Length: 186
Image (cartoon, rainbow, N blue to C red; front, side):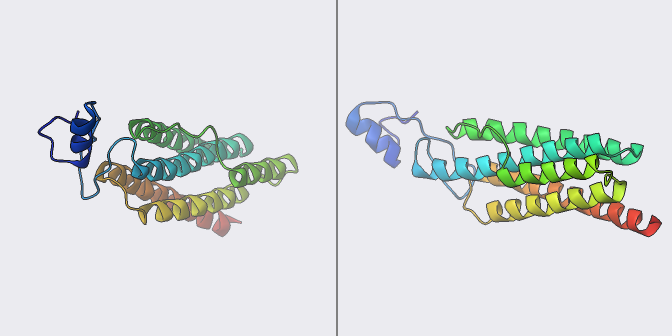
C-alpha cells in the first residue's frame, strides 16, 4: 500500500486523498500499478493468449479424438494438457493484474476444430492430415505470441509469455518433424 512517505504518483494521490492506494511492485523496466490503463493493455494481451491456449487445448483434444495412431494420439493428448496448464498460468496473471479471464477460445479456432472434426467424419483423419492441421494451429499460436512479445509488458508477464512462446515453437517444430516423417512414409 502507498504510504505518506511513498514518492510515487500513487503515493502522492493516497496522501492527498487520505486513502490507501494499492501499488504494484515493479519487477522490470515497465512500472504498472493496479487499476491503471497499462493493466488493461496487459490483461488484453494475456486474454488473447488465454484464448490461444484454449484453442490449442481444444484443437489437440480434437485431433487426439480423431486420429487412430497411438503415438500421435499420445502426442496430441500431451500437447492438449500442456496448453491447459499454460492457460491456467495465464488466468492467474490476468487476475493478478485485475482482469477477468476470457471465457473461451477464438472463432477461428472453433472453425479450425470443426474442419478437423469434419475431416475425421469423412475418413480423412490420417495421422498426416491431423499433423498438418495441428501444424497450422501452431503457426497461428506462434503468430499470436510474436504479437504479444512486441507489446510493452511487465517483467513477470514478459517472462511467462516468452517461456510459453518458446513452448509453442517447440510444439510446432515437433509436429512439423512428425508431419515430415509421416509424409515420407506415404
